[in-house]
Length: 303
Image (tube, rainbow, N blue to C red; front, side, top):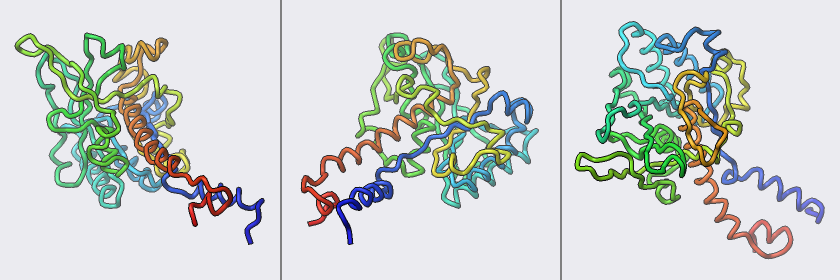
């Protein structure tokens, strides 16, 4: 029989067991300096390591995996590329989506960025592809919110959005419904006007680097990271050695002391921002519908 004293404990247990209130973790698996001391300089030789990493993340029950790395044809790494593609395909078949990057930072003015296709070996295996194109804009976008990640580039969604959609964290069109898509000027057109494109704000000032769970690539690869860190997580893999793939002055207004940070963090911040917005919405709805009746039965929503 329930007593007045046992009611609060039961309500607390029910709250902990409610799936809608569980937060999706975002974890950065970084190829840091320690990793490169252990495994060698980052490059094509890591393709075989990526295959093992995917297997490790599957054993740890990660929710989804995205690589801030594109994999063009590499004749010197054919076997490693095949291992990577096969490991990714097995992961997808087992219910853990894998997304690999396509594209490169734009260098031409007012033109579509040149996309770098991945090796054809990845095609037809259910492996997702997401754009990694980031743009800077001269007339105030950086001061308002840092770099803009284009909504679509060459038909590809941003890397973080593609991962969120494939894992079911976001539904199609949900970013628009959550108000996270913004039209921004990105470049001068051929006729001297301004081109506007839908973009997503990473939100660097809302997601400082210290707030993101970051683990070393080599530690995950060699089983030195516990399942409690990786289970149920959306995992982004990329360089964070402080030397390669760095973004300069990402958000001078929101983070005046932050001079540069790894490019992969743009995708991490964007994904974390989207996850928080998506999960805050149902929680707000639950709070609005909370019964006003006093006592245990009222708190449980029964009549």
